Length: 212
Image (cartoon, rainbow, N blue to C red; front, side):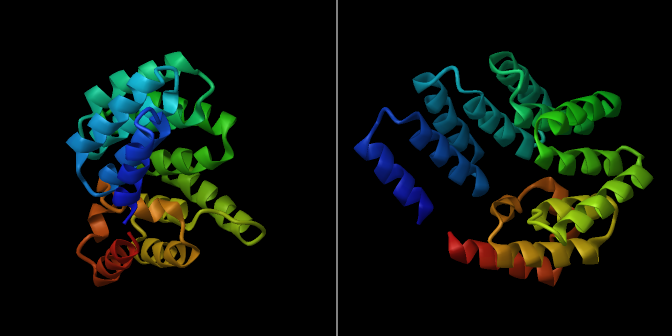
């Protein structure tokens, strides 16, 4: 499996920061958060100037709902590179779940100004922060874009879930599965709790597990 391949790569090159970071990502997807953080911390020791590794450690805290710890790391990632859009997006989520919706929206917009994919985060945070009409407008724009070019179906699904459209979200996740979108690796995320017991979601998780 992927974990075995990542560990084999590290055995061949114990100084590979990317190898440790990849292992951390794989372990996080399996819910092994302590091990994930240990791997990403080793990546940071090997390459302390790479903000991506700091964000990946933060995400393991986010998955556990430990947003204070995540925010500390995300601030450090932004200090390393203030133009790293994904750090702003992940900070937006932790701010949102910490009840700081106005700050979350600002960070999400910063990320979106740097990286088009961050529009998903802006729409989702709108939906979860009482701005449902804005979220629906952004969702419609993304769905229109999807008829012209590739738009991540799992990103669409998260917005639909935030808006309470469970059937639409499950249909989007099924499409993401067909497209082999990387986002389906993160179905353990708390955002999917509203559909976790749904037989369609259980089938999607089973299919993703079979590919690992």
